[in-house]
Image (cartoon, rainbow, N blue to C red; front, side, top):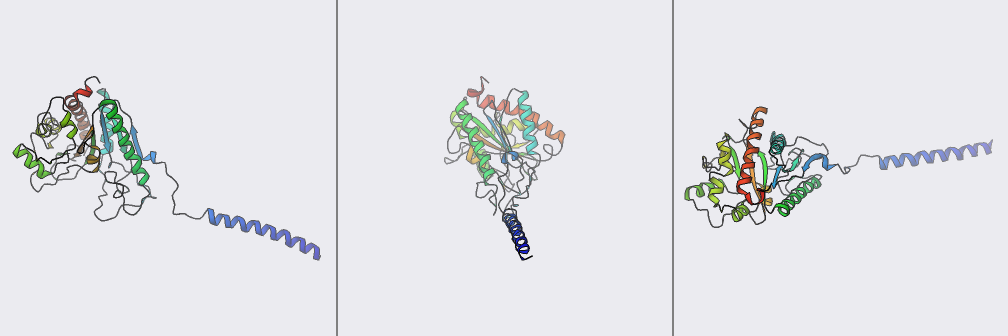
Length: 311
């Protein structure tokens, strides 16, 4: 009996050791971790290569809110979605295709409460840097497409689509000129010597040698073309500048970083779209994207004639 009890004890102990080791492994490997697995960041973006020197960017129209990225809640964080701007970008792409133009597309499906892709990397989030790789992916694609457009066409234009909630229902065009600069410029006709815009490349290489005031306020300026087609815009021939005290978006990080204010072959214009009569209903969005596609085609073929004439 003593031998039997010894053998039984040995086998039982071995089983217990195996069981203990298994449970310990589970505790180590299966416990909750603060580290997230690498997510498929490509699921949060839409990138499409084009055949025309036009890049369309929409950084604030997404609605995905992954729980494993902390909400942006630091001081002065703007966390609202630019409603319908992602859909408008996609509709605009389709309208342009019917005109034989395939723009380069850089869009995001993630909500701005998680990451702001119109800011620097360090200010795109608050405490949680989980989204850093998404930020890098998004901006590398803008850089890659900008380089491709510059190499293939020599010049190009980047349109950064946004939506604003200001009370005055008009499109605000950002050339990196403040409301005060636009007021001074439109009244004097002469910009300050130190003025820099996001379309300085176009100014330096315009096929018709158009001066800056013509590019900003003239008959073929983007604001004037929009206003002529039923979408009031500033700056334009009809509305050269916001009045003193009126809020106005002059262009953010993407316009500054990817435009030609400090040289380069790619220009940039920030498009801040109002809500009423433009974004509010599906009929408004259909009417706007159809008109804007035709306006962009006209604008590009006039101001970038040297690089679009054969396209």
